Structure formats: C-alpha cells, structure tokens
Image 1 (cartoon, helix red, strand yellow):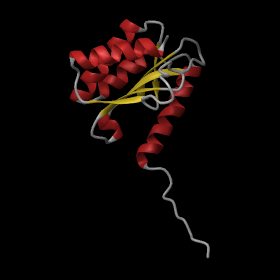
Image 2 (cartoon, rainbow, N blue to C red):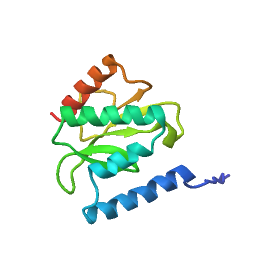
Image 3 (cartoon, helix red, strand yellow):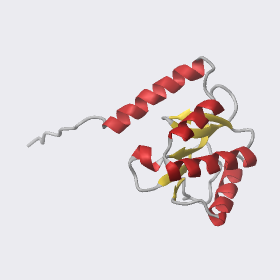
Image 4 (tube, rainbow, N blue to C red):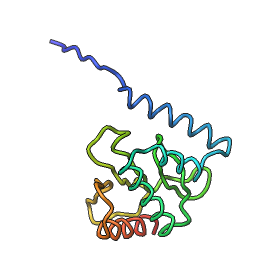
Length: 144
C-alpha cells in the first residue's frame, strides 16, 4: 500500500531568506554588495543580536582583514576576496531565525578540519573574553 506524503512547502522564513539571497545576487552583480550592506543588516538587529554581530564583525576584520564582508541570506558573512569568493564564516541572528541563540557558522571552505569530525557552527549567547578568544582562534584557523 502506498502512503501519501504531503508537504507544506517552504516556510515564510525560508521564502524570505531565498528572496533576500536573490536580491543579494543582483546587488553583487551591480557591485553594490559589501561592508555597507553588512553594516545595514547588523543595524537592523535588535539589542543583543546587534551587539554580538558588531563584535563578530570587528573580530573578523581584525583577525582576517582579507575576508570580504557581504550578506548571505540576509545575514553578515565573510568571504574570500573576488566576485565568486566562497563564504568562510557567517553570523545568524537569533531574532531573525526565530531561535533561542545566535549562531556563528563556518562553511566547508573554512579550514577547520580536525580529524574525522569537527564543529562547523557555534551557539553564541553573550560576548565574553573566553568566547572572543575561541572565536579569534577559529576565524584565524578558518582562513589558514
């Protein structure tokens, strides 16, 4: 007996992210993508999310100044230089993603390989000296 599977399709959040991604690609093609777009997205974030994103933005700029800031699905991201540069790391806002924590993530282009298993994203609730030190090391390794 065959079972019927129904899907609801993409959520409103997923649709909005895809729409933002399409806009980002158009902006990039027109040369309008970059740090200004990232700073504008960070400025839209509420309180704690904005503070954490600002701190992460500053950390990436200090540790990996060669990475190019750009938005990725409406979030701050940092990529290898060049028009088709791969995203290395990104910040996801808890408020925007409707989750209980902000996320710092790393793509498959990040050089974080350690053995046969390693983490590629980290929940971030607050900016502490310990968290900053750990993120500094991760970003430094990611671009190595």
